[in-house]
Every structure is written in structure tokens, then in C-alpha cells.
Length: 438
Image (cartoon, rainbow, N blue to C red):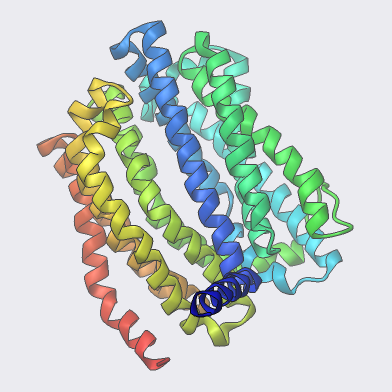
């Protein structure tokens, strides 16, 4: 009798969790983060091993490092080009009628495509000055077009992901970002191996383009009946969303820019192969925090709909995140060297100590992320900008000093020190807000 009653309560608990849009979307986003990280993990193992068999381990590490430098730089350009619309769309789309939904989405797509092409062109023109090792991208008109397409499609694909979140369609994020992109990247990177570095980042372009087409023409119309993709700009709506998004955009840029610039910094100061070693360590450690970041994204979407429940949801979301976080950190610290050896001896020899420090950084990163999510709901973007300005200045200055003094591990120390300093500063305020809601 007792076991039957326990089983019934467990079923009810699962059903209640599934019927909660916050937890359901958070679950989809967490699964997406885990599966995307898993696909990414498999992708880089296959590339490291396969390219080593074709070119030799040392030469393959250089090609991988150069590809990572291009991908990280494109990620930075697309982040700039997004103008923060990914945050604004989550904030405003849930209350939008169908006609307004369509106009807002298409306007954001159109504006960011134009800006992406402009920024991509500036990047290519300045290659001799800020990225001499990437000058090969100017050797062919096809490579030039590929980079411009890469920036544009990366930008609007990121917007589409957040549109799905805003429309409570996180399951489509899983299909788009994990399954479609994850599988196609592997296939095309292998097929394009003869193009070396270009083949690697071209696999990202093809996979992202295909997933966007599926998402925009099949998935989004299911979530928002009557939606159709088109190139149009509603200046009034853009002005409205930009007024909210821009300050958040500055905050996000300040936070993300240093890490996205690190591959370029490493390639210029150390070597392209060191870029590969650092990125793989960063990607593995990123798998730890991605689950909690997904919870924070879903929390923001739900908080935008119902601000009254936010602090209650914040407590449960943080507790849930740390339940996952701590065991993962322990696993990575203990088995990190073995994991890195799957990519090759260069990765385990040069990246293990870096991986340990980056894994520990997941704790302050998670706390800081939830605090920033709270400030976004409270619309206190000036606080977010101040925090992220400190992060940007500290990471770039401290990172530059320590990479010259300590080598690759210096960047990991810069990340851990910077993120922990922010956590110490904001933790009293975060605790106070949580206790107020008791």
C-alpha cells in the first residue's frame, strides 16, 4: 500500500513538473545543452583524431586552432550584430499578437542580417592588422562569401533559438541546435577534410544554415500560426525593442567579448595549437555550466510572463542547478586528463591544469548568471552593465598579463579570479532578495 502511494505521488510529481511551463522548457533547454555539448564533444574528438590521421597531430592541432579562431571571432561579430534582440524578443514576444509577432521577428532578422554583412566585411578588410594568421581567408572569393554568410546565419540562428524559448517551444531548440546541427557538422567536417581549417568552419555554416531553414519554415509556423519569413523593417517596433535590448546588449557584450577574443589572443601571442588546447578545455568545462545557464534562460522567459513568481522560481532554479553542477565538477576534476587524452596527447599534456581551473569557475559563473537574470527582470540594466564592465576589463587586462607570464593556464586563472570576485560582491544582495520572499 505504501509503495503504491509512493508511486502515485512520484507520477503526480512528474506530471506537475511537466505541466509547469518553466520546468518543461527548462528541461528541454537542459537536454539541448547536454546533447549539444555531447555532439560538440564528439565533433571535436572526431576532428582531432581524423585530421591527425590525415595531416599529422601537430599540423592538425594548428588547423583546428585556426578554425576555432575563426569560429570565435564570427561568434563575437554575430553577438555584436544581434543588438541584444535575443533578450528583447524573449521579453516582448510573449505578449505580442500574431501580426505584431511576425513584424517584430522579421524586422529583427532583417536588421541583424544587414549589420552582420557590414561587420563581416570590416573584419575581412582588417585581417592583415588584427589577425595575420587568418589572412588565408582572403585567398578566394568563395572564402570571403563563406565568412560573410557565416556571420549572418550565426546571428539569425541565435535569434531563432530565443524566439522558440519566448514562444514556449524549447523542444524545437533541441531539434535545431542539437540534433540537426550536431549531426550535420560531423558529416560535413569529414567530407571537407581536404580544405583543412576552412573545412572545419564550413561545416558549421552548412549545418547552421540547414537548421535555420527547417526552423523558420516548419517549426516557427507551428508555434505561431500564420507566421511567414520575409525581409521587412518596422522602425517603430525596432525602436521599441532596441530601447530595452541595447542596454542588455552592452552588458552581454562586455561579459562575452573577452572569452571570444581569447582564441585570437592565444593565436597571436602563443600559437594556433595552444588555441585548440585552450578551447577544448573551455568547451568541456562549459558543459558543466550549460545546464544551469539553460535553467536561467527559462527562468527569465517565465519571469517575463509572471514577475510575481520570479523569486520563488529563482530559489528552486538555483537549487536544481547546483544539484547538477557539483557532481559534474568533481567528475571533470578527477577524470579530466583522461577525457582530454581522447583528443590527443597534446590536449592532455597542455590542457589538464587549465581544465581544472575552468571547471571550478562554473560555480561563480552560475551564481553570477542567476543574479544577472534577477536584475534583468527588475530592469536594473545599469547594475548588469557595471558588473560586466568589470568582468571585461579584468579578464582582458589580467588575462593579457597572465598569459605572458604563465602561458595558457594564465587565462584560466584570470577567469576564475574575475568571476569569483564578482560572486563575492553580489552574493549578499542575492541572498537578501531570496530571503525577502520567504
